[in-house]
Length: 339
Image (tube, rainbow, N blue to C red; front, side, top):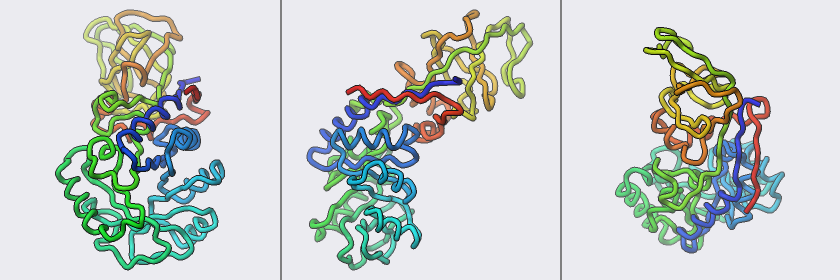
């Protein structure tokens, strides 16, 4: 197998406990959209619910219907927009829907979204709320980067919903759940922290989080480049001296992106630099000397956080995690279910 993706549900459960402690009485709603941020929606949803999450959040009705089959009695909230035909499906499946307009569909539980500064979905002012409305919410734009702006959003929401305490009010994302107590209200919709990834791009352990996903492969072959020889497309790495390299059987088709050239992986436990252009199905790593084929390689795991790769790529962990291909044709997926 080209690589192995391991999912530690015990770590996810402990992250749920950490978030619940931070929320101090507010409910935790587990965001498992995009296949659980690449971790596996059904597995992660089950672990989150078992550890104390009160609801599941997804982006689309089709995502919700997959979860409804697996969890017939769970509360499932669809965060994204829905078509008229999808509203009918949601009604039949007993889903909750987020509505970003004054039109409130009948016969389905609705959460009205107020735009307090994200500038995407949401109404500018709350409409008259029909009996189907069970919640009001907003979405923070900068809880991970600009606490003052986030607090301004929270205050606008608080003022606008003061008379609606009989409804469930929810504002906080992972960053706000961990750092902004005033965002708690009745529930928090947490995604990235659930998976043990830092919403702030730093060390997850700073907030008591444990990474859930690890990713490993092995050396397919080693090769000695003589001075002046190169590896990969475009000759982006030319050896200035005799240099050993390892070829790994993963590339951007597996989610190891082209802009990860220069990051490090662990070959036989030692950090080694990725060199040359990352190919669709192969990546080169600089070595101190030859190693045998089959030598284990850690891409993400202990002492090698996804946050490091994100900094090299100039992106966020969310994007990298969602891009990892754990389908059976590309990787072996292993779920560890220990507490």
